[in-house]
Every structure is written in structure tokens, then in C-alpha cells.
Amino acid sequence: MQKTVDNLFPSVRIVLIETSHPGNIGAAARAMKNMGLTRLVLVNPKDFPDDTAFRRAASAVDVVSSAIVVDTLDEAIAGCQLVLGTSARDRRIPWPMLEPRACGEKVVAEQAAGAEIAIIFGRESRGLKNEELQKCHFHINIPTGEAYSSLNLAMAVQVLCYEVLQASLAAKPEVSELEIDKREVDNWDMAYATSDSVEHLFQHLEETLVQVEFHDPENPRQLLTRLRRMFNRIRLDEMEVNILRGFLTSVNKLGRPQRRQESEGNNT
Ligand code: SAH
Image (tube, rainbow, N blue to C red; front, side, top):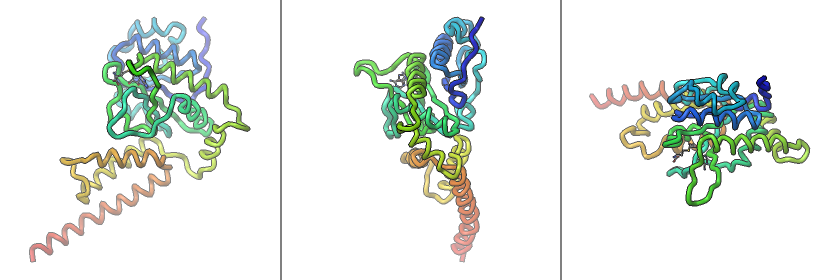
């Protein structure tokens, strides 16, 4: 009989984006279950459900059967307060980075503090797009030999899940840095904002920047990417998001009558 899934990491979801080979989904599920993780989210997988995925999962078929399939990354990370993206490649605008070991420690500390967490993996062919990585608080790079830096998808899942389990086994509340992290989160008076409320803020900010003619979509100059990186670095809480949304709404209201006055002035 199938051994029941233990639930060491109920707040951690592994997100695979547009996986082409169903075998990789099965192998990733096995890698997860071996390390005590169970929540798999598939964004628009190419061939799923598929027998190969179940075969490659071996005794982790339960992880594959309970996988949630969604159409977009935003749906996959909805409700998450910590979003981590894995990538083999450096990007033009570098993002805050975490080593796999520090990633494991952060995941364990933030789960203990009540956060919902996603670790995202890209396509076999093209990895993660820049706009997908830009939704993440941190980029995780698995160090490799110089000649070949791109791991097989399921192997990358294995490395990260291993680090999460090791961090949880090693956690010793009285001494570790983990506790400091956890206390930092615990002492905060507000919950960190979820990925969806931050996404709505970014959309509102973009519309407002266009409205006040600070941002020209025809000549973007990486402005929005840099603003995203700044806000991701800060890790906004729910109250801060509400304040900024309120401020933007006031700017939106102000922008309109002023323009009318200006054009009236021009007519005289
Ligand atoms: N050819 C792709 C790599 C795809 S490998 C590219 O150039 O980006 C599939 C996925 O495995 C990646 O999107 C990433 O999520 C993960 N992965 C592979 N190698 C990795 C590495 N060295 N560090 C972090 N993640 C890695």
C-alpha cells in the first residue's frame, strides 16, 4: 500500500511552469516526496495528465494526482508572501540572490512564522522569463561547474527540496540564525503582502505613472523593472500596500481636474 504523504511543509508549494516532458513532472514529484514536500502546482503543462508522469513518480503518484493545474503564474503564487525563483542564468538587471542553503533556511524560518511560500521552476527549453523572475523576492542559483550550468528540471527540484529538508532537520531554535529571521517576522505588526496584492499595486502604479506622464510605455527604460525590484527588496506588508494604493488613488483623482484647468488655460 502507498505510504501516506507526510506533511512537513504544508505552506510550501513547488511551482513548475509550462513543463514539456511529463516525465520531469513525475521525477519532480518523487524528488519532493523524498524530501517531505507534497504541494505541486503546474502552470499550463504541455502533456498532463500523462502516464509517463505517474510512472516516473514511482511511490509519489499521490503528489502527482493531487497536483493543481492552473493557467498562469499569478494564479499559482496567489496568497504567497515569499516567492523564490530558480534560474541557471544571470539577468541584465540583477535581483537579490540566495544560495540554495540559505534558501532552505529562509523557507523553514518563514514557514515557522506563518508565511505561505512558492518556489518556482522554469521550462526545460527556456527557463523562466524575465517577467516571471521579476515576481520573485529572490533568485536562487544552484552553483555548478562552469562548463554546464543548466540542471535537469527534476534535479533542480531535488536540490532545493533537499536544502529545505536539511534546514528543517538542522533547525535549533536557541542558537540558529533561523530564529533571528523568525523573530524578525514575528515581531512585525502586519502580515507581509501576498503576491496578488503586490501585483495589483504594481498595475496601479504603472497606470498612474503613465497618467502623470512619468512613464512612457513606448520608451520604458527598465523603469518598472527597477521599481519592482525595489518593492520586492523592501517586502511590503499589507498595510503599506493599502497606503500606497490610497496614495495612488489620490494622485489619479488629482491628475484629471488639473489637466482640465491646464487646457482651459491654454484656450484663453
Ligand atoms: N535552458 C534553460 C534552463 C532550463 S532548466 C535556461 O537557459 O534557463 C529547467 C529549470 O530548472 C530552470 O528554469 C530552473 O528553474 C531550474 N534550474 C536548472 N539549472 C539551475 C541552476 N543551476 N540553478 C537554479 N535553477 C536551475
